[in-house]
Structures are given as C-alpha cells and as structure tokens.
Length: 208
Image (cartoon, rainbow, N blue to C red; front, side, top):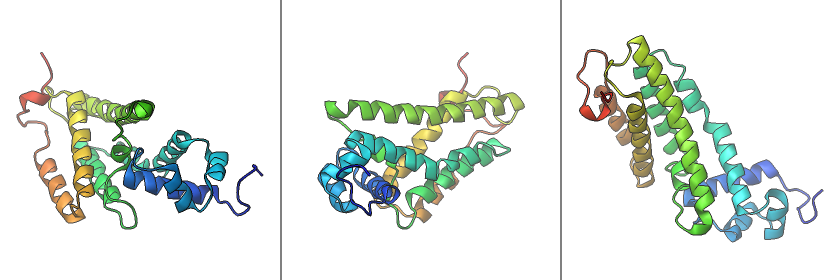
C-alpha cells in the first residue's frame, strides 16, 4: 500500500468524485483542497494515489470518456447522416442534463482555462475535441460519397458546425436550460440539416 493512502481508500470512487468536481467547476475552479475534502482524504494521500492535479484531471477525462464515449461510437454506426446527427445531439442533451450529474459538459468546462500554467490542459482538450470532429468529418465524407449528403457540401465544415452546436447546447445546459428546451433546439437543427436534393448554404458548400 502506498504510504499516506487511507486503508479504505477506493480509487475508483475517488476518481468519480474528482470527475464530478471538475465537471461542475472546471479545471481551474477545482482546487486540491476542494478535491481532498470531497474525497475525504488529506492532500498527501491524494498526491500519492493520483499524482498532481493535472494528473488527476487527465485520469478524470479518461474516466469520462470511458463512461460516455459510447455516444459518438454508437452514433457514427448509424445508417444515415440524419440518424448520426440525431443520435449525437440527443445523446449530448441526455448527457448534459442527466439527473445526478452536473449540467453542461466536462469537455467544455474543463477547457475553460486561461492561466499560462494550464496551457497544457487547454491544448489537450482542444486536441480531444478535434479528434471527435475528425471522426464526424470522416463519416460525413463517406455519406457524401454514398449520396447521403449533397455533392457540393463540405464534410469538414459540417462536422465543425455540429461540434459548435454541441458546445452551445452544453453552455445552455450549464445556464439552466431544460432537457425539453434543448431537445426543441435539436429538432430545429434536424429540420434544417442538409439532405440530398436540398440547397446547401454557401458556408458549408464545398470550395470550388
């Protein structure tokens, strides 16, 4: 047993507690003192179990992805782009308004870092969001080739658009918007989503 760690220390439970704190307050808004108090250990025990605050945050992000990563994985397997988009947006709304969890999204809350000391965290979060956007763009490109999206659309711009909507939904949830309100927004997005035969706005049209 690592020196300084309580005998009954449950690392998984402690990580889930840390995850919820980072989710609620963001990286910079969550102090070691707050983490230690919520987990019920002294700061040295926290360091012994997880390393420093940055290490703990990275482990919390991994835990978050482990629990919620199925949203994108499942959505990208859908047969049509409309189903992909609906699944991603509905899954996001369910996540950010889930009873018992903080409103909003950890990937957004965690990214709200501004100090030079947190630059590494900021870059890491941006990279992770970029990965998800890349997966979506690849799926949209396939849909374009299959005729499920108009031939003049830009899959990368559409993927960025979808991720921007996701971020906006998370901010609205954090501000108190209800699940019902956000699902109405999702419905509006789905009604306006580009489909074969529809005119594509110039902002998401494939550059000539």
